[in-house]
Amino acid sequence: MDYRSVIESAYNRESWQKLLHDIFKNGAVFFQRPKEVDKNSSLATSALKLGTITLPDLNKIAVYEVKLTDRVNIEKNRAEIRNYLVSDWTSQGCAGSFMFCFRDNESVLRFSYVSKTWDFGENGNVEKHETDTKRFTYLLGEGHRSRTAIKQFEELRNSQKKLQDITKAFSIEALSDRFFNDYKNNYNSI
Image (tube, rainbow, N blue to C red; front, side):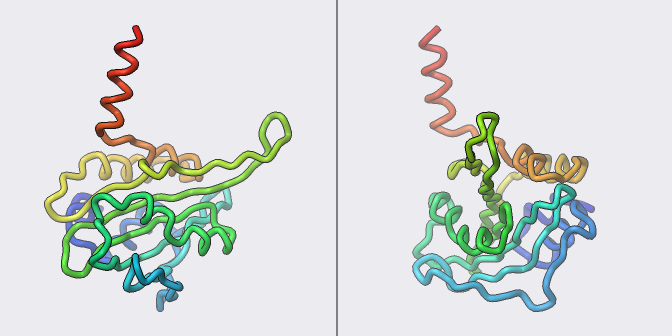
């Protein structure tokens, strides 16, 4: 399957479902009629749960489609978009979600992978593991060169497809001001 044609195009539900099915095979199950999710009217005009992906390690990933309001800056509101629907998928026992966030009149898509899990650490205490708000999210669609995202989806396809593989695949930090500030601070401390 040609991932570039899906990732660098305006959002198309059917194309993305085919891409996810190509990666996760029969683990990706999509509803014939997506389920409407209570929406935050200041963030989304509609929110649909498209289905779930059951991973070989038995963790589940919920898959959502979110039509954003005009109020939301799709390029800057990463944390707000990331935190949207967390209570929905965690209440259903999912370990994470894939969110496809877009507006009808634009060809830009924000894809976010969000995960929150708990387990027992070496000391026996419960430890929470969750994805960072400034990472695990990509701007995709027409006009966005998406070489990194394409590579990550292809690597995920060739992985064992466990939750840790998904987290590893999407944990790429974009070259940002934060990256360069951290680099400068590390360089100056030598």
